[in-house]
Image 1 (spheres, rainbow, N blue to C red):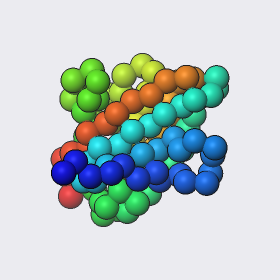
Image 2: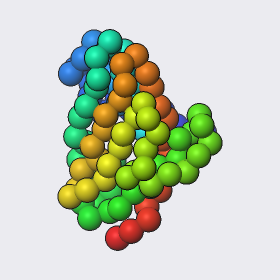
Image 3: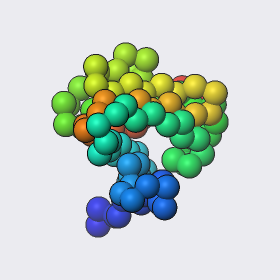
Length: 101
């Protein structure tokens, strides 16, 4: 059983941009021709507010700290939030891992 991804931004946009498959996969989709940014509370992902995360880009098969993202996507975990920034008309699937409290 692989489970079902749940939209984290249901009814905020015609199509969900944030899909979470517990316990650790996050899909971020930008369907628009402009930069997409958001701030997501870590508790919405099931993590405590002081958790430090690392993300593996599933499609690129590269592990990187959230402070060193790939050029089209930027992700940062701080103060109980995951800050996301995604280039126009792009997407990323992240496998999240706890690396600190």
